[in-house]
Length: 229
Image (cartoon, rainbow, N blue to C red; front, side, top):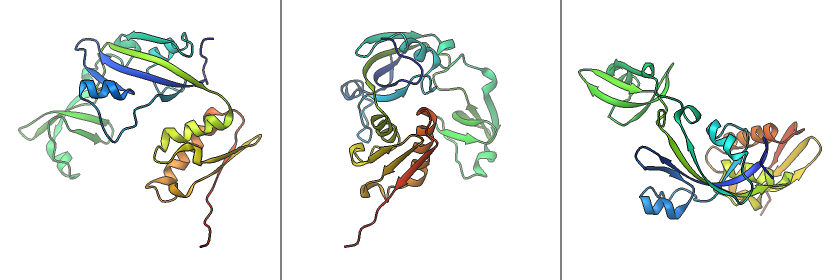
């Protein structure tokens, strides 16, 4: 059965640039090690995708809708279906002092945030000027995705836990107790998560995801219990 908007799936993928064959990203540890992009601080496992959420290039999402759970496919996306063509107007030249005033010493290859433009990559530095490219790094590229739909996440409790894991990987999701009501969801937070840096922002993000992707939910309640010794 083909996938539909709103379905929760676990997806393995490897992303390559067609023109060079370079592997840009992968969820598979063996591939990451083979091509030299392995990061020990990253979890290599199938990633959660909510079909239609816009987390992936639109062209890829449309192709996924044609697939079934357990299916593997190689998908080629031209720039128009991926990150668009390169836009020369997004490559700007600015005075280096505008960055130095904000405590930034620009270097070629550095990613910098510029108010009014967003995040760009420094392409050149010289004569008191900096050239910054605000195109997406994969703009203008034809992309090859090797994808495999490993599973479909079913049931409200498992969907909540999948959304928790997407934002909070430091604590096993089975330690979060989840109760689902008609219009609200209660999540009991395990003690291991109490003092994680940025936990309040993470919880707000989880709540936002739940109310966006789970129909009828109007309230998300987090419960933290402190027991006396």
